Length: 131
Image (cartoon, rainbow, N blue to C red; front, top):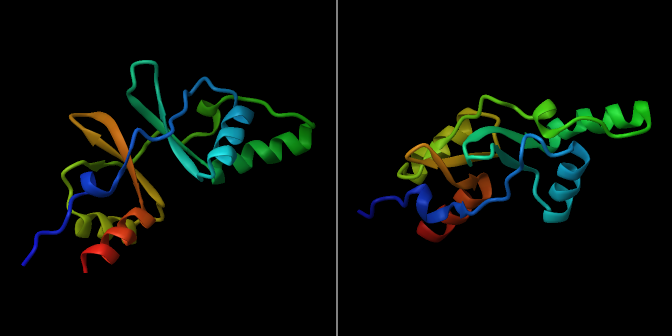
């Protein structure tokens, strides 16, 4: 029987990332331009410090509609406590983590550093190819 692939084989390497200091309106524009619904937030050393998603950007959008202008930076809207996956995790265990959480993406760490991101669709593609 074949061993299941690991997230290393299916993740997106070099994901779009944001600085916590980036103005939120610029982050929203990048999410829309790249047609993605979320991305990791990294500090100047490249350390993962949060995640920003379209859902969290709704708060900024509602704020903008009320005050007639955008305000704040990514750090004001991101989730700082990010659940991650290890690069060597097998895709079956990764899929179980997706089913057990509401998350649509997980940053992938190797030796504590961000090396990629895996989404539900990445895993679904992997299962479709493997089985």
